[in-house]
Length: 224
Image (cartoon, rainbow, N blue to C red; front, side):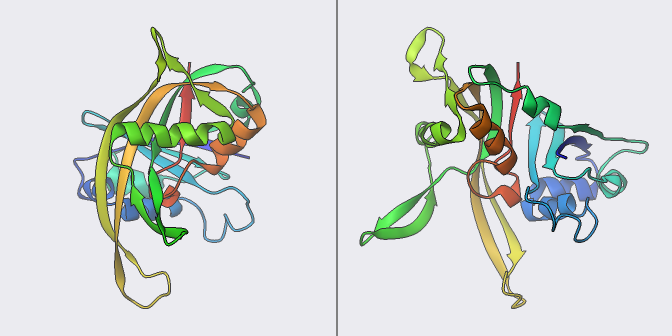
């Protein structure tokens, strides 16, 4: 089973502001929506994305199990609030090669610098042109292509509609007790695509695109 869920975050609450400002805190809140060890026997990871439209913040979560967002409602929501969850598989199964869709993706476009012939430091792409090119380079092996802009066939119909730098701390993965600083450049793409390989595309939707998936990157959604 795969479930797509949606819940609104209240920026007027103290905890809501914390979640909106700190991607490590939001990651922890998302993962707390599932019972301990419940995800260990699944081969699908949890993806999430935070969309902002003026003062409205929407959290989307794609997961192998239905989440329980009660703690988010109590700490970062409104009294009496509910959330939406739907089975994602029927939608995946109707995706076919040749279909065209509008899409939104939040991602962390990066490149690895070469150092003496080997893979070196990973750095972010800086300009919107570089970021769109990063997505275009990955599209083919993910089962889609970015469509050309109507009337401008030499331009890709994909726009960086938001880009922000995020810095936050996280516990050292080796349990040393130290706090590491994380710096990410996260961008939002909006555009149009055509499915070129339905099976690859479905797999890409579930696996996510690019790096920093734990911090709200990689979830691509579609609309007509």
